[in-house]
Image 1 (cartoon, helix red, strand yellow):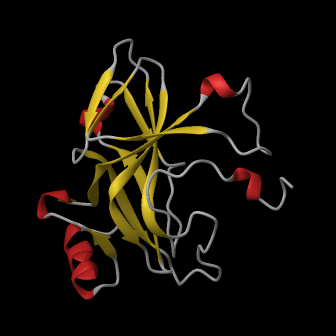
Image 2 (spheres, rainbow, N blue to C red; image 1 turned 30 degrees about the vertical axis):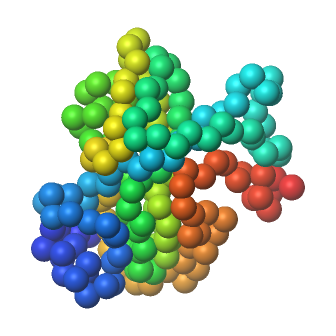
Amino acid sequence: MILSDKTLRNWISTGKLVIEPLDDIQIQPASIDLRLGTHYLKVAEHRSATLDLVNKPEYEEIIADEVVIPPHAFLLATTREYVKLPDDLTAFVEGRSSIGRLGLFIQNAGWVDPGFEGEITIELYNANSLPIKLKSGVRICQLVFAKLDQKAQNPYRGKYQGQRKATGSRVREDKDIR
């Protein structure tokens, strides 16, 4: 079951769901918009010939109120909001249609597990042939929340728990990779 704005407001007011900071304009009929933060990571392309799943990738850190994503470029960004999901709620990360119509693809592997807490790292890809300028504070993506039939037996307590700022890949920490 996808949660409505009424249920989302109730869960936020009781503290069952935490999204901070949050302005009323962010609450949509069946989702909550999240805003772009000021922290970005860009793969340090000139320092490595390839990326793999075993070695830690090198990133260049960018802290700025505005950032320009060149055509066909990839960037990690963070949301302004800190999110804390209860163990019986999951969320889907979706790009806002108005942003997608400019050619900016927004992802987060599409999913936030029950029990996750932290700022959301989003992956940005400029599919356009023109650069796209972004400004912190703009509503960049939305979370659509779905209630689980019961609390997760093993809620998320993984390698990205509590993350602040854009967080690079930690796939090398997966047990099946080592």
